[in-house]
Image (tube, rainbow, N blue to C red; front, side):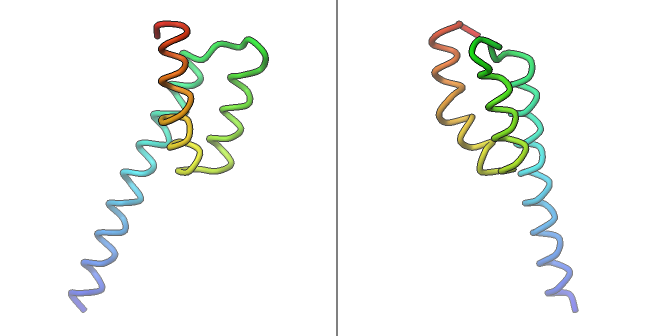
Length: 72
C-alpha cells in the first residue's frame, strides 16, 4: 500500500513540475514574443496543444532566438 502512495506522490510531483514549466513558457511567450508575422499566436497554439513537448520546443528553439533578435 505504501508503494502505491509513493508512486502517486512521485507522479504528482512530476506533473506539478511539468505544469509549472508549461505555464511559465506560455506566460513568457505571451508577454515577450513579438506579434510580427503571427509568431506569438503560432507559439501559443503549439504550447497549448502539445503541452510539455511544446513548452520544451519553445524553451529550446524559440526563446534563445528571440533573445538574440530582440534582446528580451
